[in-house]
Image (cartoon, rainbow, N blue to C red; front, side, top):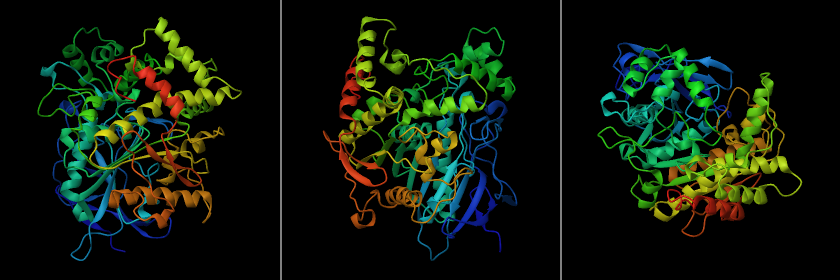
Length: 534
């Protein structure tokens, strides 16, 4: 069989042909560079488009992943030369074909880890539908999110988000040659990837680069969506006595990536559980290259963002991520603490609660009454972290977008607890509910996906997830035909958050978690910066 070759703006690429779970054809192109290697003087800087190449580039092997801890394979490594993307399509463009909807997936990993590797994000499920799938890398940790207020240093932050912008620009310039429609692009992501998608929705820099967006388990109103300036602290962890960002940057630009990664880990380890992240997006000063210059809540409530149809959702026990982390630590022979939860730690940093204050004690008492009644205290602990780390901010985003969006906003909750729940499968958790990242197991095939039988709940659920997601990419509506999935998914409205629960069945519901969200509304109203959240 002749290897497929496609022309891009930078040069030709050679791919290979495989199959999806139904035996249908997938044409794959791996590791296509979309940016210059961000090394040397380009470390920490805004990305630049890839240079043209001569001849035919081999795109049959994976590209480098960005330097990080690979959680799945429990190894540290990668490369700074990692700005590449994977493209999967069912057919290549010719004069007779109709261009297909494009789906661009932004991976998660807390802005510290993750990659586009097919070992985790295999196309075998999504490509049963006729779409074109693109999965880019972006810089992580300090390499992607180091920032300074010193304009002269030209490191304003958000390099990792600007990598995503450049990947989307590559899609606009090249995807037609892979049979993708540049005028029908859906961005979707999970966890920090979902936060990234939300930032792209809010950023003027991303205007016109996509036409729909799916947010899975993360928004800009979650505690892990905003970073801070730690340049001096990072250089000090490298053993250098510096007092300014300028001195620190001189050190950090020269540091071997391995030592930089070690220092990054030490800075991050000093953070409280719901404290502000050290390496994550920041609000920049206005400039021609700024990614975002206003607080997300202000942009959302103003309605001045990229008005596109949105799908926003969460998993029923996102907070089981804490149990998953304990399971991974135990399997690695590390000590696991079984201390009772510190209720003050459940309150996100941006509320600004003063530790030990009367208001803090009052909030902790309310948290105790809401989450620690009844016999199942373990599950209640994970329910509290589900809400504090994820659900409150996600519902707040859906509510505010429903009030200011001119396009439909679809809200979902995944409660499905079956054999492909990714995080539970990986960590062997048996707690009930859908953990953080469990949804990924129904959208992507990965190296730990077990075999499943036709007609099983796993098979039905994969096809249901894939249909909802690709319908949205095709039509801007996940259920354009009620007969197909047996349900009509109603968009959220002002004053009424319609949503569907994705369990063993699909069910229509209204206003998720009302009692618990009332408590979080009270907590958010303690700070003028978060008073409009819920």
